[in-house]
Image (cartoon, rainbow, N blue to C red; front, side, top):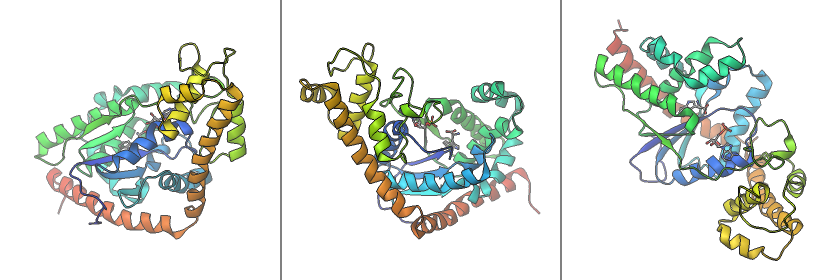
Length: 334
Ligand code: AMP
Ligand code: TRP
């Protein structure tokens, strides 16, 4: 077993779909939390590429996004010495375990998944994998006997399904799986769209001017911040209701510098919006410049391949053992 550079007792696992370049919102709302959690838990973080193909993907782009996401996470501070980072599709036991679980999951229970209902109602040409996806997610989790699964609230129902699947399997075949808990982060800072600050900054936004992606050109990032929507009141005060644009910029500044909202209001009390935006742009571009430097230093290096190759052996072994145990219990052996 790889020795992680920390002493921990509880294990977490989370998967991230490689669907496009992550945003400043993802960074502030999710990745910075994961960077903190890596100190307290043994953690598995994988690129959920098999989940990504439940909706149509362009092959070349998907291929690029997988490696790019690994590099970006490391560049953002996910430490490969403290996390086991791997690519889901490189561990074939996830799909193998998933099939055994599929045959032990009632169709009716799966039909209640709200994400499936949402996604399938938008496009009636969906594939069967979109329906069975939560069982693959259960396989991802149950293979590793983890304690907690950090996810956004939208994935809570899938973790509950995972628990039900595990409890039922343990009852039918004897103790096989640890029962995991969802770990829903406390409402972190929500970063809003720069052009329409009452809408969340989102990877899939139609107006690129409102969204900062971590691999955007630094001059473009500066321009986006300088032209962020504000108001005509000219006071740098935190008031989400009446001043959503300025409050969003304060939140961004606070999350990156670690300063409190009060400190920021005091510091900028006598400055105008132009000066304030310039300083927000300074801290954001400085932070992202660091991330990009680390990203471009590793994206084409052997370091990524070395990490992934070492880790895949570790996780294949763990998942393989779980698969063999399950097969025996089910009666699938000679
Ligand atoms: P998504 O991009 O929707 O798949 O979300 C991935 C993670 O990033 C989840 O934990 C979200 O809660 C978080 N996240 C996404 N967008 C934002 C945002 N604008 N502000 C804060 N957190 C976000
Ligand atoms: N379904 C998750 C999402 O869309 C990604 C994911 C796949 C996942 N497998 C997982 C998250 C296992 C946590 C644990 O965001």
